[in-house]
Length: 141
Image (cartoon, rainbow, N blue to C red; front, side, top):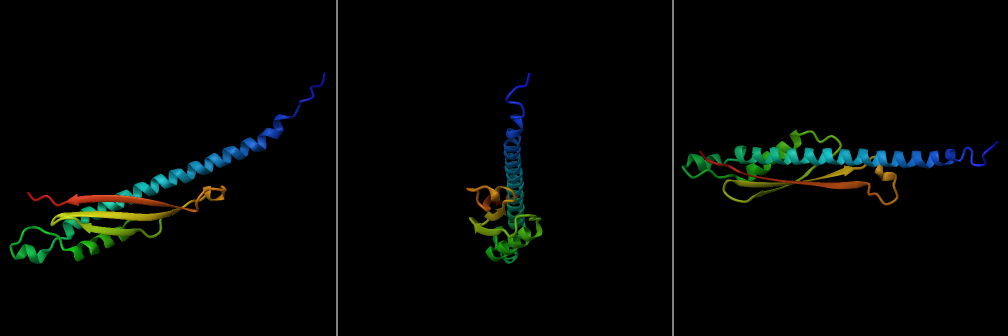
């Protein structure tokens, strides 16, 4: 006896395969985005730590003034620190530096992450913006 619906599951396989491939591509892009977020956060933390230590106003300290940061030097240190970190897949990072007190610094980094697979989806953006903020205050002992 022959059944009339024989082979009908073969029609569902291409659609199921397409759904699995789309979900896998979204997963890869989201994992990459999370990795980049962590990299940018680590870069911001390292840059702000470098800034509060290497951004010291040496002339003021030699004059006998209290520990304070030199704004120009802090910006240079943050720029060098950001450039020294690996930004594979991010491109350039935009750094905004705020000296919020005599011994305190805030760093705000912004990067653009191009998506790999999700780009082919109709409503998906080509690039996502990643931001990270870090702050540090030099503590005297």
